[in-house]
Amino acid sequence: MRRSKLLNPLLAAALLMTTTLYANHQHESTFDFVKKDAVTIDRTSSFELDMTPAKALPLFTAIGEILWAPGWQPNILSGDGFEEGTIWVTKHDNSTTYWHVSKYNTQLNEAIYTFVTPDLVMGTVKVVLSDNSKKGSVVKITYNLTALSTKGNQKLRSHYSKDHYPKMIAEWKMLIMKNMKKIKSAHK
Image (cartoon, rainbow, N blue to C red; front, top):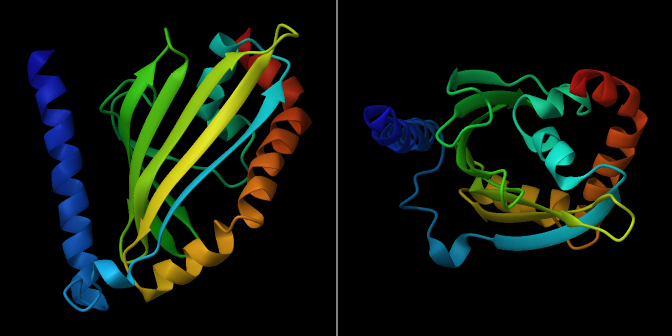
């Protein structure tokens, strides 16, 4: 067990470095793209669900998002999709993203995922669930991202803009509500 806890962060670091180095040789060099050029964003938005935080937290995992996110097909390389140290890969819009579960705490109803899409962006997604006054949850999603290229800057400025980000998170709620029957049957 102890060896596993040490190997997962080392594996994640090696995976991130390898993919970043590969991407840099394919496109612009990180030495050409420096801190003053990189866009960094920090966006938070929230919504409510008619589920307790304990039942809702698994929806925001590699496995859980399969129930509601169209096209979400994680390829889990290590771990179970929930536990800290789990590593998985996704493909979207001709890009590959490498994910790592940095924190998954069922006591605090909180998860933090670190990810990199080589030659595009790197950052974290933090999901925190708390009780609302209606026996449900407040789901708070925070993205902290830094562009790794000019193309990454463009993606952050458009897809994660102050106007677009709340719409993206609102769509998450809509998709979860639309798939609630499937979600509830999976919880049985």
